[in-house]
Length: 104
Image (cartoon, rainbow, N blue to C red; front, side, top):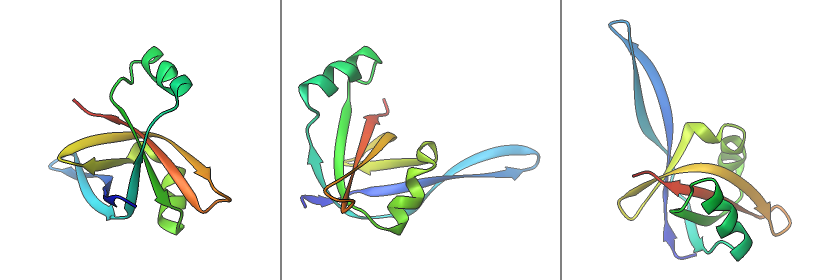
């Protein structure tokens, strides 16, 4: 694996009647940056996901729990934030590909 990424979870709370959103650190796994296949690149461009990154992480209970609520999580990598839009299990359920789009 190349290095570590930081996965953060969104939490919301009410302060004086106002709903506030905060990001808290959830998990810091080792990850390997992967490239999209040519077909996946074209599909990503069709739906305006031009700054897409794919991270291969080892599957575990925290990643499994995350897969059911992807919109509640983001990835921080190299000073950039990425929203997670898909998680695919590969290699006999041993790894998960997190497909993310950079937030501008």
